[in-house]
Image 1 (cartoon, helix red, strand yellow):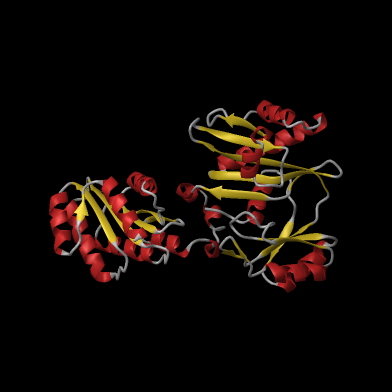
Image 2 (cartoon, rainbow, N blue to C red; image 1 turned 135 degrees about the vertical axis):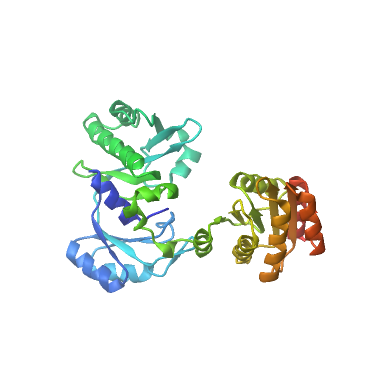
Length: 377
């Protein structure tokens, strides 16, 4: 689950990280009033769950309250990478002397928490990784031992910070690790983390993502969810107990099992296709679940073919086949369907599908090749 910048800043502030205060507006008049309250130069920033706001024109400086209202009017309603701006953050302008990047994320191969920092702040860290990877300083925090103060200080020295700024940086890095660990986050980053003209550290922009599976431990975090920022199809899937993530391809995937769903997308890409979604229909794969899966997949107008990949373990192939047949009676599917059915009662399932005019294959590789061909045809 993602949250807005202003929400992330509130979380960071509770851990003692210095943030740039501001207020949220949903109309130009509100923005003007907030700017008048704050006084001086302010920045008007689009609040959307995506990056690239500055490049898209979603961040503007305003020197007067009237300019702030005008900037809000220009930003509100703007489309930024498929996200419509419904609110803006009005914050005081900052005197930026130096910009840095600081982030915390999970390092799965090492089974530890990765703390990253760079003296090249203010730009996307992915670009820094491509153009100048040596500029990124990294340390691993152990989930049992934690992120030690000496590691944070080492990072500061490696970044070339002045000696009198090392302890301040180390304190913020340690606190950010605590935010990540205690809040069950999947990503926490400050970009830029700045030194102001008078030498003070300030988190000028922050971003947080939370582990959905841990939200039961954090009811306050769940309350920060902005449904306007989430994909409507993914929300519908969640309400129906289906794991669904929309992608940008043309081949819809309906699969039972998360691991098999990942393998299915790999097989589609191996044969030159692009999956339109990740979809795990769950272990049951009954008629109602399959029908809902069809509805979710066909809601994407980019889908040109559908691959149903079912491996019958606990789930019986004949039950799945009956589910597919009944689902096709409930949902009009106007694109080609390729079915791969293997495992328990697979032959019985194939017979049922054959009666419905659908041919099922046993090989996932063959099914992936056929669905790519169908989508391209």
